Length: 452
Image (cartoon, rainbow, N blue to C red; front, side, top):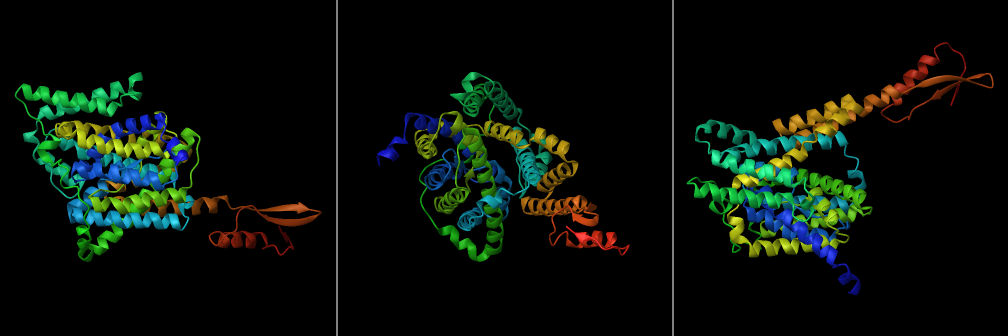
């Protein structure tokens, strides 16, 4: 007990508080962009964040709703409804736990970097496009982000430029404040949201109007009650639930392990990837029963934790506690948040996801891998992740096979006056045929040779 209490040190309490301040607007924004209520995002951060930290392995990881899943969640909700999303989240949790129990955590690290950068960039583009209607206060309907964008374009004549003003002010403040030395103690997203809310209030005083969270969503706590009614959707939509849950499970595992690995490098720590996945999986099994959406390890929250002095899992646990307290104490303030300001937060998130410098680096190292990243991004935007990621993996495998064939060499050497054939590559079932052809080529003259 004394050892546990010692981990609730002041530096970890402070880090948990700062991370909660950063996480609150992200939970709300990601939930709204996913087509669900803000409270679904917040409850995920509270319940999922606490369970993942308590049962996981990383000392620095902080879990919650992630930008990488927004387009998938929106698609599921728009086409099949919220109960199907909850059931898919439950399946995803089971998949993540299975990956951990089978000790496949380290294998997940083998996901090609170019594919990850590609689908992340594609998600960033979709998030950016998805916020354009909110930037001008336009109605947007449809089952996909591109459908919503098309709907907004059709209603372009009813644009509300007060919304764009609030968005522009929020983005400008976030970018400028993020460059100051005060950004560590007062996170840029929070300062920008407060400023955006004040700008919206100013617009209201001048006779204008902007959409707010309270005007569009019910932020009461009365609906937050444990329920398993969503399980009734399983009978009718079981195929969709299994496919969506499987894809989400793999992506949650990859996202979480990438985040925890980066945080270990940043803070000089280590973790058990399989135990970390079991913690994340338990969190995703729990959140649907309280109306939450999928959670994963998130590098933005985790890096904030490290930079704020967090050294133990208790920082992530306290982040969840503070997040819950914020919602209870600040309900009225949350209702005042302008939708355009939340769209600004998402635009900045999209900017981080589209890593142009990383794409350039991949192209500089290998133009084929660079092309693979671009193809994966394009498929993510044009179709979805269930197509882009598998196609990216298949193309990467074909690229690897081509490289193995190109690297294959069978050389003739002299050893003690005797010609020796040396195979200078790995011989596997994928290269055996090419090795045999190369050997036959060198043996056509009929001279006896030794195989090394």
